[in-house]
Length: 176
Ligand SMILES: [Mn+2]
Image 1 (cartoon, rainbow, N blue to C red):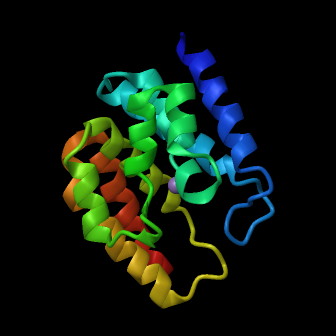
Image 2 (image 1 turned 45 degrees about the vertical axis):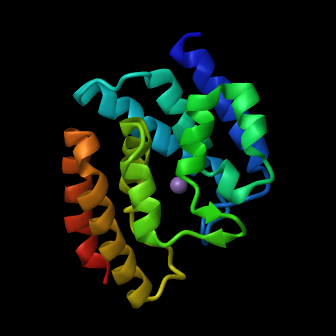
């Protein structure tokens, strides 16, 4: 399947799974975030090519469905295959009813296929836009520190994305 068709298949699936959800402190559909992450992945591939790009883009589009919707791992595996389903699982902070600590979450991503780490780098690049108006200064500062951990643990997966994240982190200082 070509990139456009695999993109659209995952995009429709994700947009429907997240239907009714919005971005934080916004009226925009949550799916807007997913398209921005997929866009980052495709641009990253032009800087330094990413193996299994079509599936990596699907992981970008599906990276929050296990954490934020009722979609199951088995459903993802049946529809998109094991590589994509595992990616969505590793990118989810939910674990056995609880939530993974940041270090466990990042460690689990760092020890897997580099494509999963690349999606996380692209996710954070996307999220370092001006913070939601509802966020306190302390929350913004914590988010900045967390982004530095993501860069430190996962940056090795894709150098141009690491560089882009580094710039976004530096720029983010102005918000707190
Ligand atoms: Mn995300």
